[in-house]
Every structure is written in C-alpha cells, then in structure tokens.
Amino acid sequence: MMLRRPLALRSLLAAALVVIGCTEPPTAPDSVLAPSASTRSASSELSASRSRLTPPASAPSIDQLFGEFGRPAINPNDYVCGNEASPVTDVLYAEISRTASTRAELNRLLVLDDLGAAILPTYEALFLQTSATPQTFGYDGEFTQAMTKVERDVKKFWDIPSSQIQVLGMHGTMLLDTLRTARTYEEVFGIPAPVAASWAREMRDSLLASTTMNGGDYAYFTFNAVSFRATGLPDKIVMGDGILEAFAAIGFGDVAPQAIFAHEFAHQIQYEHEYLDDLGQVSKPEATRFSELMADAMAAYFLTHARGAAMNQKRVEQFLSAFYQMGDCAFDDPGHHGTPNQRLAAAQFGFDVADQYQKQGHILTSQEFYELFMKVYPTIVAPDA
Image (cartoon, rainbow, N blue to C red):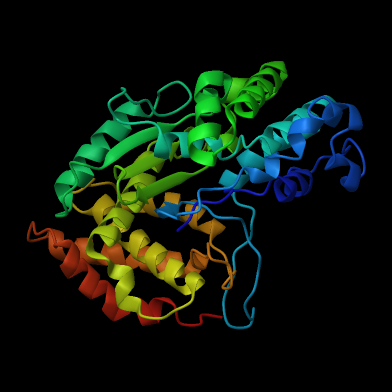
C-alpha cells in the first residue's frame, strides 16, 4: 500500500477536544485550525510550495499499521463497527490537546504539520536509513531489547528468507537534524536544495521553541509501524516510537513490540508469496482488509505458539482488544483494516491453530497456515450484526 499521511491532524485536533473533554478550547473550531497571519507570513514564500510534499510517484509495497481513522462507509445494519477513539488513541489525543491549549503551541504544530513532520521520520527511515547504524526503539531506547529478541524469534519461526529484512526505529527527534531533514526533502520528495534547507531550519526552530512536543518525542510524528518492500531497495520493517510509547502508556509495553512486529512481519510473508495475487480483481479496500486480517491471524499464531513468542494468550487477547478497537467500517477507504470483530475473529483463528499444532511441537509453514486461513476467511468477514 502506498504510504500516505498516517493521521489527519485536523481530525485529530477536533477529536482531542471532544475525547479528552477540553473545557476551555482556545478559540472557535474554524480559527483553531488556522494559524495566525503572523505565523504564516514568516514563510509565505515557502508555503505555496509545500503542496509538493507528496510521496514519490512510484508506489512501493508498503503496509501501514494505521491509515486515516474512520470514515464510516458501510451499512451499519450489517456490521458491528468500531470508533475512532480507543485507549491508545486517547493518549495521542491527550498530547495534541495539551499542545492545542495555547495559541502559540497550536500554531507551531500546524507549521510542523505543514512541513511534513508526520511523514518525514517514516520516509527517512524507509528510503535513507539502514540497519548498518545501531538501532534503538522507544524515546529512551527502552524497547530495544524486546525488539532485538522478537526480530530474532520471528525470523527463526517463519520459513521465508528473512535475513535481508532490515528492522529500523522511527524517531521524531530526527526533525531536529537539519541535514537529515533537508536530505529527506531533497532525495525523497524532490524539493530543491535551497528550499529544503530553509524548511529544515524552520522545522528545527519550531520544534525547539515548543514547550509540549519534547524535541520530537511526540506521538503524532511516529504513531505508526510500516512493512516495506520495493524493487531495488532493502526490505524493511520500521517501528515508530510514538505507537510503542502510546501502548506502553496504557499498560501494554510488555506486549506491544512483539505483537506489532509480528503483524508487520506477516506482511513480508505476503509479499514473498504474492498472496494478494490470489484475490483476483477486487477493490483496494477489500485487498487491504484481506491482507490485514491474515496478518492479524499470523501474528496471533506466532505470539502464542510454544515455539514462537510463547506469550500468555489472555495477555495477548487483552492487548488485541485495545489494539482492535481501532478497527473500522470504512469499506471504501483503501486503508480499511477490518472491523474490530473481524480482527478479533482472525486473531482467534491464529490462537486456535497454535493450540492445535504446538501440542505436537509442530510449526506450520507459511503456505500451510495460508491454506488454513483461506478456508475460514469467508466466515471471518461475514456480516455480524
């Protein structure tokens, strides 16, 4: 799937004020979402060019953990739908609400968003970083050990060639480095060097001036995980600090790194076997739903298999319950990941298969698992209301 802005800031600002219950919003909604004239005037010559900050024309194979949140688009009488809000998104909303509580901070966030703060860390990791540099995960590296172990365990568990898959951390703090930011503008987005350098300085200065965005350790900038495969580039899985920290904040720091990585690795299995080709001519939302639900099932299988992560099923279920609250009913959205019930059903299938086969100490091949999944897939996606 082609990468796009993972979260829409204007929607998040509106949700933050509602979900967190901001009793004294800084101003009326329309004006909250518009920076002051003085903020814009300082970079008026650049603003007109920022619409050029779009992904490369050639779309690589990319999975995003999260697309844009909920645009309901199916018959609600057929499916039990999820909501945008969940415990983990409440963490994100709370951060944004604190930023939006003062006019100056809100304007800084809007400027940073204009400059691409929510996508630059992802693209820099995907296109310009490699695992040759020692990787860390989490704002303070607190998930590095867990990520190192789960990478080793997942690659040993599944039967696809995987030594070439690089696992990288995505850090919002890279936005303070004007050389890295400018290089990303230039090499990934094709922005002319003088403009790229100017934008990079504006990004750094705005972030340094912020009192709420912690020098880039801010969930909105890295609230994602990505699985990537493209011709001529290394295969990669990129884990965002923001999404790991958000799940840790609600008590799932012991499960989130393993579960999210296992899900993203499942997409590498799909790329390797070209499973999406088996669907034939289907809509983009249907293809995405298929790939996401299969990844959910494969992740659950690995997480609870005795020769996989060997995690407690009840603990994994608790995490997935929070994780899947962000399931959606946006069946016409290319980023559709499945409803919460569908995602839980896919995970339950993975649990059941692990329970059935681990008793004999057997690990299914990826193809064997896929064939079992295909038999139950129609029941997983059937109307459930």
